[in-house]
View: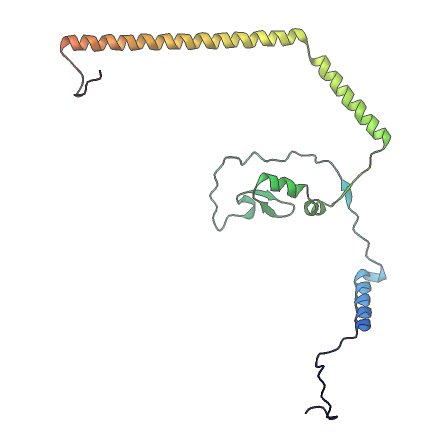
Length: 199
């Protein structure tokens, strides 16, 4: 036996001093937190979540066929490409979930916290919306609307007349064609190379 005492040591697993390793872990964490010159690292200050100022393009690739090869860049692969996160999402619902999600907002430098509106801000917003509604109502002119309706009716009538003229013209052409067939039959021509009867 390897041990000189002659007693059998059945507990062959290595023992760890938990207190010592906890101290080492705390020391390592404090060292990581401290930056150059002994200054602690400041937590990242992110902006509050704000309204998107651009329109999300979901329809530009709709119904289009793209040939994808091994050398095609990731941004031109099938699906929706996010250039902020450098990823491709396969469908529009998942793309919207992605751009509204935590990871994407973090990459943009924003937190998921929203700025709390004050009472004055809410009142101003209501006033602005009320002014917009009043302007829309002023723009609505009854006489102008009646004029538009009359123009639409005239267009519909003109379209209907054109359709009737087209139908009449086709009927006249068919009649003239039938008269030519009758004249050919009287003259002894039954058709051009066809032995089948059309009756």
